[in-house]
Length: 150
Image (cartoon, rainbow, N blue to C red):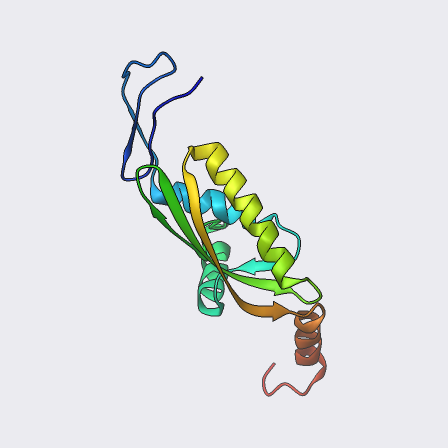
């Protein structure tokens, strides 16, 4: 069952029988959400987004009690193709090259399966390495060190 459909600010036309039965439009944020979820499900990825966007996102997530899976993901969507840019933080010990390869595979499969778009490019910007225990040590240090105010 093939359909002639395109995506994003572009419209999908056609149906299973080949006749036009209307249009389907997929917004850019749909593609960024799909890609963001696929990235977050990849082993070796600690978080997605740059420092400032992660901090702002964490505050937004706490206030709205939801998360933004598209955070740290930028997409450019055409009629039949998409290009994706990702900012990630990897776990210490993860092989960055292998993690990037797995991200590309996972994101491509998810986006192509759900939207029908051909993923022509995935650029990955590794912005940091997360060392397990660093977050815990910072919190413990605040509690045990001499605070100026209580």
